[in-house]
Image 1: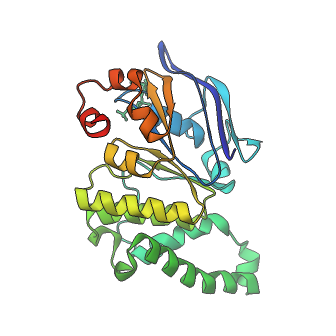
Image 2: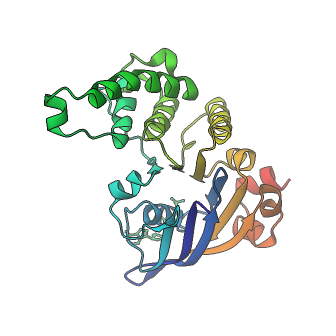
Length: 258
Ligand SMILES: Nc1ncnc2c1ncn2[C@@H]1O[C@H](COP(=O)(O)OP(=O)(O)OP(=O)(O)O)[C@@H](O)[C@H]1O
């Protein structure tokens, strides 16, 4: 397994936000974490990526325990996240934003920069090609010279994913990537996830849009009131009684369960 989330508990004062959540993510799969508002998805996401420390439990990534490590240390392991709110740099060009993502893989010493070390020159040269590839992949190649702030909201969300990809993730965690996207943009996003899957990038998705979740996930983990109530394929989960009950009266039940 690439990621093991093992018996995670999280208390905020008297509130038990997570009550012993466990799940695993095999290499190359797309796993979605879903659940009604307040279920504990964001808290779980923050714990996996080091932004919060769990009250108890362990997170293992590629065999190493990463619980309690700082976010940038976890990112160095190849576990990269995006944020619910767009975090791109508005006054940089699309290309420049992606280059910043690349820095996760390379932080030369001042000495090697000042002495013109070949590795620094090679990095800068290769980065041009890598940035172009990434922008092609997310469909923003024609906008590479635009300022991030000139992009539409949907394009900014794609740019965020491009920045995440530039960090060369082994596992990419996307926090509600399709929130605020229109139907066409959501379907573009689903296509992108499938493309990333073909490139063997493992993806964990926290997502509300059930068309997206049902369309791209290999496995779904359902969280409700801080507990895992179901997990399995989209078909199995959409027919699970506990899941239907947790979502009763919500829009996606009719979409997903039919
Ligand atoms: N910093 C905090 N302090 C106190 N309570 C918190 C904190 N963060 C989250 N909670 C509580 O923990 C529970 C889970 O919240 P969380 O944001 O993880 O849910 P969620 O599933 O991501 O919800 P949404 O879908 O609305 O984003 C909620 O009851 C929330 O009020």
